[in-house]
Length: 246
Picture 1 (cartoon, one colour):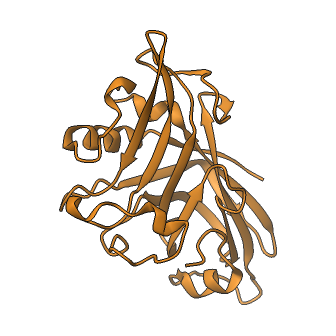
Picture 2 (picture 1 turned 180 degrees about the vertical axis):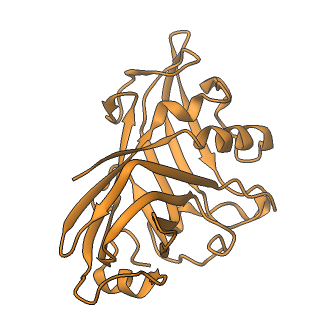
């Protein structure tokens, strides 16, 4: 499944545009959406214990892989541009994390929303048979489908280095995907024949706080832990923010 970099034909076929009140001389814009990763105000660096979360754990990140799906851009007149696709992101793979959209309708956009993880229509075992997506499979005894996220690393616990694994997904019949809604401070204006870049930032530290302050000593073997799955889902609503439109 070619979802790491979405080609122009894929986007054109997947972009469902409502009735836009555009003049006949208006034309499309091109938009690139990039998912970036930070810890606080620092760009994410892998494999070094240099970050501290709200609980006080000093930690590193060794793995960050996840799915994003069902991206919707909403115009100020209520029209939606919908990408009914699944996108796989590996924060260490530069071939992922960028979504190229050709032929975006011009106009003023007030918000962008997406699903972090997979809704049930996309979370079906064996739907993605090829790696790297197939490597995100969720165990059949726990309900099958796929991980939403694999966030792994090491942390210092009383001078003993331990591992943590924040693996999120559907537990049996209970989904834990996150609906993320981000509003622009001022409308995102796409003009005729324009080339635009929009950055979306994930703050890793926010997985561990607000509303639930999490201790990394408890973030291991959590795939069957309904309580922690729910707490990570709740925290995930505060993980993303928008950068500037270039």
